[in-house]
Image 1 (cartoon, rainbow, N blue to C red):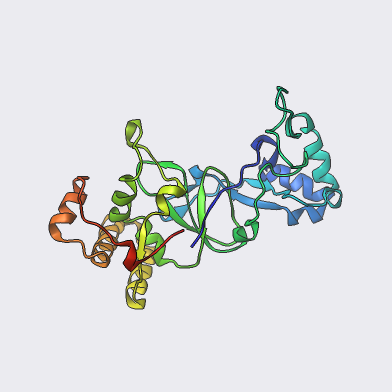
Image 2 (cartoon, rainbow, N blue to C red):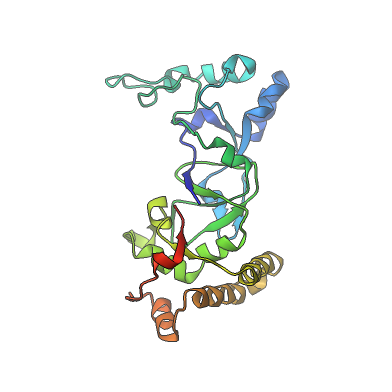
Length: 259
């Protein structure tokens, strides 16, 4: 499974809009609905849930014909000096690059993956904040995502074991915050998981949504399932709960790595 970065517009002030601005643009150009998509930022993505704040992205990807969307063109043109690719010595504009002034700054070749179910997470957090995200939501950088409909995987990623493993690969910042960069998350080995265990995790994840008052208990059950998957002993489990380093090797030769 491939980890993708969120969208880097180069100037969010222009490309990310609220519902009122979206409605205004659609009144004059209904066709613009094709390229105005709901977007999530890191603060919207929580552990096992999202809290969308009704923000939208004008997704003018590379190669789009802006003349098909006159209201979008007029709106973005009001930011022209800040949107155009600048020369190296110029003080205004976005970073130099082979994109047009109205286009998203970075080429998002995998843009179709935003229209699929996914697992997304923010970049900086105290612990894993992975959540299932419905098809159609776009993700803003520096958040990342995996296009997948495998619900059980979010349980593994949010588990205490996965969090412990990932945190051995990077440096924790002041205040206990950790950067959940793709380069760290992709190193987590995912074993081949029997269908009955997949279903067990799915049912527990669904139970989390239905019974928020039992969150702690249910997450501990998910942790126990994941510990069993990786053959973690009681002693190792106790060390993990204490956030101590263990030398147990989770063999990548017996797993399917996220890449």
